[in-house]
Every structure is written in structure tokens, then in C-alpha cells.
Length: 381
Image (cartoon, rainbow, N blue to C red):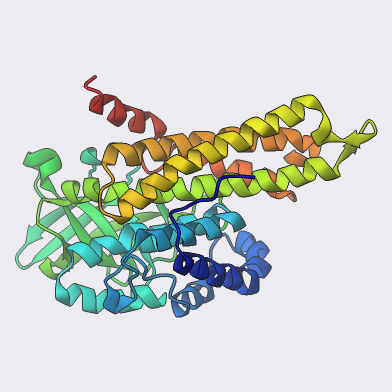
């Protein structure tokens, strides 16, 4: 028996039960269709909003919970279904929405946040560029002042929710002479003239998650679309990456744990040479190692979630959580595929999809190499 997790209260567990009921009723039966469509339908977002699942990171008047542990519970339950769900919902709710909620003006909040919480305004964040990768300070998208307006030109790539987003918080260079200190965030509505999307990108995994390239050709916005302070976009992004990385970590570990639990049952049911394959010493020892690895990681991650809910988590600890859980997830799922034998390589088996879906988590939200660089710097190296 695993040690009981002690960071969640009865309220959190009641919320978990309501999330699970919604998933079992409305989401899981449609999961194959999401894969075929390579996107989550608007009905998914509207129902999530109706149930109060999309405004957890917002102010209380927009449905906010005021406690990141509720966000973590939602991410865990979504990840048990597949890795794409917490990714899409997390980008919308935990990663992009806080920019508007915490940096937006009262007018901006009233303009967008009710729709965000209801699932009527789908969010994406435009950071990554074709030539930039993890180097956000090197972005090339520009915003040039023209009278009372800004003219935005450039492109973004690998944008989750990008194909269906209604509003994209976009980083653009407003002062080329200032380097990282010359970047500003703009909230760009998809209806703006000059805004366009490329095709849905053909990814190795996470097929349910629509991912696209975005293009800005002389898109005109005003100061009313600036999020936060002029030329402070890079600082704003650095401050918000902490929650993004923690959200990723929560989903990583919950996804790995669920597939591991299912793999354990498979090893009990699958027979070879007259006994269940889980009874072979190698497999028994391997499963013992994997469950220990997951549960030890969970203990560290739970402390990170608790500290973040109190406002005390450092960017270094968030970086540790992100790289470690993505690494653990990859290792655990690789072993799970092996334990399934040939069936583990069949797309009809959840373990195969999970294995493919997990690979990208060592790349996004800052690659694992970047995470280690940040941790190393904190060590004085």
C-alpha cells in the first residue's frame, strides 16, 4: 500500500469526484473521435466551462478557486484519460489565462475572462517561433508603432490550441535595441485582419491536441491589447513559466502512474509458461522499482504543489519538477511497453499511445536540458 497523500482535503477530493464523473460521462466515450478529428470540439470546452473547470486560475468573480491544488486535481484526472487533455486545458486555463487575469486591466478582464471561464473564448499562447525554440529572448515577431496602433508581423509554431483558439497572447519585439527588455505581450483576437493559421501539425503523438503554426501579416492592434507593461513581456513570461512547468509535471506523473497501474493488471492477467508474467522475478523486481520511482517522485511533486498553492515555489524547484517527472514518465512508459510485449507496439493499446504522447514532455515548457541549466546556475555553476 502506498503512503496516503496528505496535501488534498475533502473539498479537493469532492472536486476530483465531480471531474471524474464528467470525464466518464462526456469525455471518455468520445475520446476516439477526438483522435480522428485531431482536436477537441467546442462542445468539450463549453461543457468544461459549464462545470466550472476552466476558471480555476482566475479571480473568484470569474470562478477562480484561489488554490492551485484544485488545478492539480483537474490535471491529474485529465491525464488519467490521456496526455493531450491536460495539455490543451492547461494551456487555456493554467498557462494563458493567468496572463490576462494577473496582468490585464479591468477592461481587459471584463472583455475576455467571462468567455474564457465559460469555454466560449479558447486561449493559446504564442511564444515559440520556427527559429527560436527554447530561446524566447531571440524571437523575431515584431510590433511596430504606427500612430495609435501597433503593426504586428511574424510567425509562431508548435502552438497548442493554435488551430481553434479565439484569442492568442502573443510575444512580439517592440524595441529591437533592448534585446529581452524590448518584448511586449499582446492579446490578439483570431478575427483580426492579417491573422491566419497554418495546417494542423502532424505530430508523433497527442493527436487530440490541435497544434498549429500562426502567422501575423500587418495585424493591427492598439494599446488596449497590450497585456502587462510595455517592453516587460520577457519578464512576464519568465514569471509565468513557473506555473506552466509545475502543471506539466503534475500531468506527467499522473499520466505515467495511471498507465503503470494498468500495466500491473496486464502482467497479472497475461499468462506465459504457465504463470502470469508479473510473477517472473525480473518483471516483479522491475514493477517494484517503477512503483517506488513514481511514488517517491509524487511525494516531491506534492510538496511543490503545496508550496505553489501558498505562493512559495521557486522557479528552480519548478524546473526540477518538470525535468524529473518528464524523465520518469518516459522511463516508466518505456518499461510498460516492454512488459506488454508485441501488444505494446499496437496503437489500439493505451500503453502505445501513452508512450508516444509522453516523448514531447522532455522538450516543451523548456527542454530538460534548459531545466538542468537553470538548476545548475542556482548551484553557482
